[in-house]
Length: 342
Image: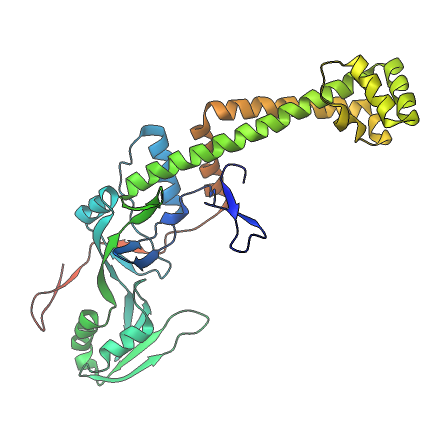
């Protein structure tokens, strides 16, 4: 967490990060809605892996060739519209048409998936006055959603379904508006710009983290180089231990005379006598610290390469298959009772 700024919590008892240094663009993985004074935000969610791959593509090429398609936890369909997807990527403002899923059992219409922005309660309220419906039952359980719409007869099922699609919220068009806070100000931006800004943010976080870690490792290397040199010389080791038995100041004076340029006195004096006797372990640890330093220096030289590596690791570690299917089938209403399927 060393790569972000910390501030006092509301009660001044703790500190908390101003921003969480997430390793992927979390803001685009969770649907977000909010309204403030003069500002409204509606950010759709995208598939975890598709988003990570888009970020990797952007880092490697500076472009995202294929637009990202929203993906919602409630499954259903997204009615694909290339122009809307382009607007979503470029401006963040786009119209998305979403639709749930249903099937027919005899004279019963069963809805088993609904658009993210709809609810079962909303749908039931909207269809209560449709002629031809004899009963509506919410049969949802631990196995999933199931809203049963029983029609008066098989003959009216198609007409009832047309009205359900039209008025219930099983199909709806929503307007996205990607608004995020940048430098304490709300900014409207497209998916591509948001990804670009996240990459910049993540690069700064990683650079600060690696720099602090490199400072810590470098200091430890200096400490262990003195320890190894001290313990590797049997005569100096015995003199130091004898001085340490007399007192800490005597041991410190001995180290100051032996290593006049070092600042490792307190670190060495804080170690137990048992640990000071194992020179092989200290040499091995020193080698590990030097290898870590080399890796940190390489990571600092190409932070974006590290971001790509981490995103690939996340893709392997987690499995989040797409939930919202993409379809080209659309239902358009042009007249009061006419349904056109395209």
